[in-house]
Length: 133
Image (cartoon, rainbow, N blue to C red; front, top):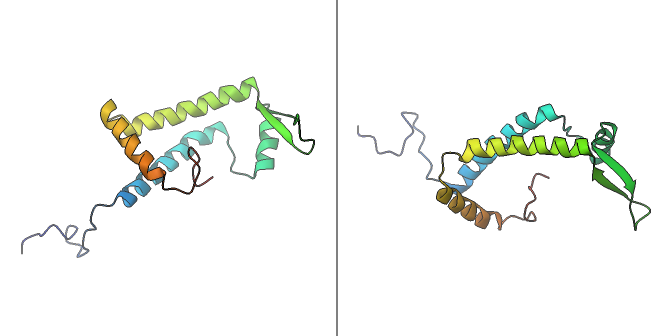
């Protein structure tokens, strides 16, 4: 019996047609896992905001100051150590970016970014904000 290309190697399961949503989800999951693994050694805990800020302040990565116009709020600023750690985190992210898209030439990468940007505009998240946040 001839293979029609509709089954996946004798499993009897019909192959799904190509799917942008599936591929974006698959790549997104992979990148999220790589980022989590890469950033874990930098000590970014997945706790709630107050505990996170307490931890960052205790590690001298951020400084709490009175908000200049709202007495009920605090303003946060990065310390020199915090800026260094942020630089390390960006380094991890850039290395993952290179690993993911390093096989593309600059034209293909620009095209991919443009097309993904168009898809991302359909998201309910504000630009530059990940929906998981």
